[in-house]
Length: 481
Image 1: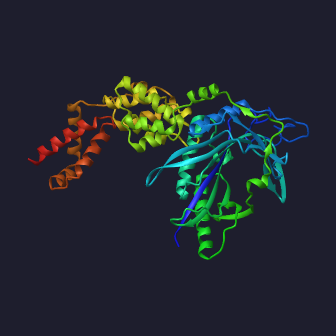
Image 2: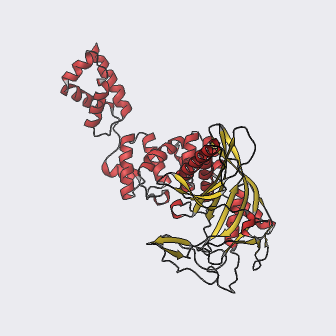
Image 3: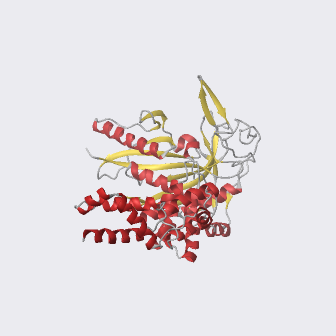
């Protein structure tokens, strides 16, 4: 039987605040900080300790809700979510349940069939748990992460393939990074994806028993784990079995999901309003002020870039990271003063500049400013240097940080366009290679390109390619007469 997957996602994203959600402890990198150094009675759940809401975390959460086209609720309620995990010191998590911060949003994703709208059910604030490490049969707990502001984003079950789930995850991560609310560093666990999967007969509209794959911290794991679970459930249904509602892990080495525990329902958590926190009431004027401060988001920016003459692919590449899009914008603005087209800037940025940034480099740390890149492209456009020489100049710019014009003057790299000088070098090359000339005259016209390369080499790569080509073609044609 043909089955249709039904997939929804839950995303947990740590917010980029300086302090934790309900106390003043610093938020630190849990992968490098010494364990249990940034804790206090509040985030370790000591008796009598009272939580206080982090206003910056609320502001960042509202930014996300607005960017996801959600309705922001002027009043929301914090609740206690009761369950026992060893990395949750209070024995409950402060979260939001019946009245979340934001609901009823959406994101459009690209699919092979075109744009698809994926609904966002809710966006709510909670706190992260501690971190468990298992060493030599013992479990060690680091509470540095306990209480870090966490945003949970829940979609409706609108996704129908694992690829769609990844497309949503990629787009959401980009939005969070554009907003400056999350670093997007999946390896450090600051954003984690959970895939809720069920299958049903193709054409059906029922919702069958689902499983939840927890803590997928890479797009590859999200894709592979979801695909495996679709296949596993389909085989169970084909065999006449039933799918158990459970929480699963995903083993990247085996490529398989495995059972962790029975999947809880909402009533299992025994939610009730957090007695130590009042309702969260937001001023409508403050919400509007946050809306007005939102940056241009990837979709809008991509549309603007295509309107500047870039291809859809170029625009997509340049808008994946906000810093790259900002770099291009500054270069394009400066390019107007130099008569350099945005398309030419995009080509140099996406190929030559990217190629010189190693895996650990970022565009923010690039020694070549947008203005310097445009100045280099302008030197090519006005034929001061040719493209190969410009790339050598770009290499030097990365090393020295000098302006391209300065490097060209110091090293004498200006392009030679004098036809008489180029004709002289062509004559020398033809005279030095009589056998190749004879083969050319006998019909092997592909040698024309070989002669071109020899002339360019003889002129140290600085000759104008257009002048070489036109002069060489003229001289070879005259030899045939």
